[in-house]
Image 1 (cartoon, one colour):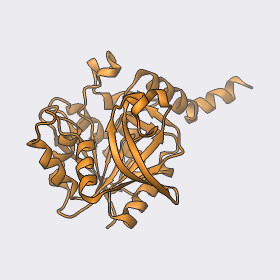
Image 2 (spheres, rainbow, N blue to C red; image 1 turned 90 degrees about the vertical axis):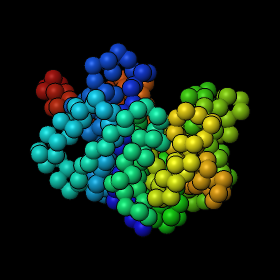
Image 3 (cartoon, helix red, strand yellow; image 1 turned 30 degrees about the horizontal axis):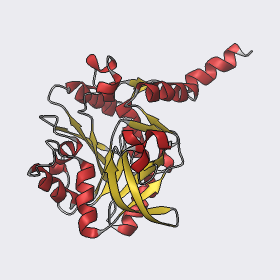
Length: 269
């Protein structure tokens, strides 16, 4: 089945980038002339997604106001925008489950997060969607990070590499640097089968953690089906859940914006 729908959770508190998030949600932080949520929806629509469900917190009405305004300006006239509410901060898996009513039974879907944006984003996501249509199993985006930073992320254990796609045999959340199974992490783009909702449901009754995490649901999937798949992007990743990543993203996207290019041309005359 072809993926045409996406879930975009934006209810996170953004504690790593405070005080920027004391007066606005993290997804509304501007990079160049658009907030993060706008960058991600552009990426989704350019990749062929026709329907996006935004999962926001109960007090984050600003997302609805902004996206309704942009939709009226025909920025995404080929895509439908829905809104769901995550009532309590119970983890990214709970946010995804909050959007279940917008996904038909048996229908696969994409999950994207605003924490990461990419240069030339439209080059990678279609490949992930294409691999999903062939595998009919979870396909996650992978990115290589320095070994000394793997303890910040969910790190994958690779079983083998076949024609530029990786067979993922396990996921380790924030491992010790010396014990990390690789330096490949999952930066927040996931093509998923509908069955992942069943694995999220199991986590609500699990004593392991008070939060429902997508990574844990993928671990349960691996335990049953033995593998998921990963596709490594070659595009530059900007970790916008950190201040360093935000500044790097600002520098990159501002430098390629037409306003900046026009300004440079005028000042160089």
